[in-house]
Length: 134
Length: 134
DNA sequence: CTCTTGACTGATAGTTACTATCAAGTTGTA
DNA sequence: TACAACTTGATAGTAACTATCAGTCAAGAG
View 1 (cartoon, chains in turn orange, blue, red, yellow):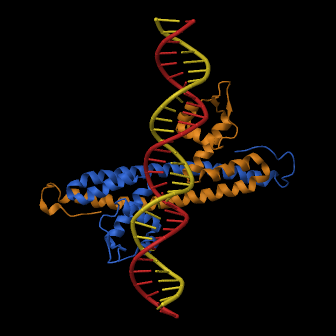
View 2 (cartoon, rainbow over the protein chains, first blue to last red; view 1 turned 180 degrees about the vertical axis):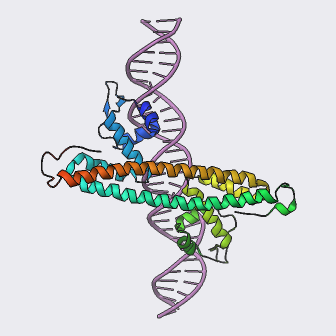
View 3 (spheres, helix red, strand yellow; view 1 turned 60 degrees about the vertical axis):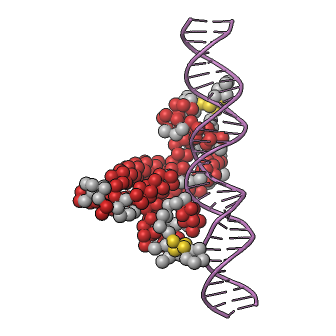
C-alpha cells in the first residue's frame, strides 16, 4: 500500500493532480484507511499509469473516464477499448511528427544564431548591429 | 499581404488563436488597413511560425513575449535568444523521449487486447468473461 | 499528557490558454 | 438596395490544473 506522497514520487505526478484525478473518478478502485487516507495498491498504480499515458497524449479527462468505465464493465467492451488505444497511438505518432517538425525550426534558428555569434557580434554597441530578427 | 483567414489556413492555427496571440503582443509588426483589418506580411508569418513552434513545445505565452521583446531590442540580445532556443530544443527532446515511453505503454496495451480478442472473447455473455482489466 | 510536526483532508479560488458567442462594421455581388 | 461573407472587439465560458487554507489525525519529544 502506498500513500499519495509515495505515488506522487513513484509516478512523477503531483499530489494535487492525483487528488484531482481521484475526484474526477479516474481511480475506480482506490480505498481509504480508517482515517480517510487514500491507499494506493498495485492496481491503482496501473490506473495512474494509464491515466498519465492518455493525458500525456492529450486525451481529455472525460474521455479517460469513459475508457475507465469501459474497463469496469468488463470483457464485453474490449473491442471498444482496443479502438481507443489504437486511436491514441495514432495521435501519439502524429505528435511525434509535429515535434520533429518543430525541432527542424529550432535547428534552423540555432544555426542562424550561431552564425551571427561567430561572425559579427563582438560589439553590441556597433550601430550596425541593431537589426530586428525573429 | 494575407488576411487572418488566409494565415489561419496557411499556418494551421485558428483565427481565434491568432487574434488571441495578437492581443497578447506576440506579433509585434502587424499592420491594419483603413478598415482596421489585420494585414499579415511575410515577416508576420515568421512570427506566427516561431510562436507556434514555442507553444507546441509548451513555452508559456509570457516567455514567448519575452523572446519576442528580446528580438525587438536587436543584436545585443542574441546570446540570450540563442540560449532560449537551445533550452527549448532540450525540452523538445525530452518530450520526444516521454512520448516514446508512452507509446511503449500503448503498444503493451495493444498486444494485451489483441491477445484477448484472438483467444477467448467470441461470446461476451460468457460469465467467465467479466474480469476487470486496466 | 500536552505540544509540535508532518502528512493528509476537502473546499474554494485563481491561472493559463484557449474557445465560443455575439453584436456591429465593411465589402462584393446580384 | 439587399444580402452574404468577412472582419472586428468585448465578453463569457471551459479544461485542467495549481495554490491556498483551515482543519483532522497520529507519532514522537519533553
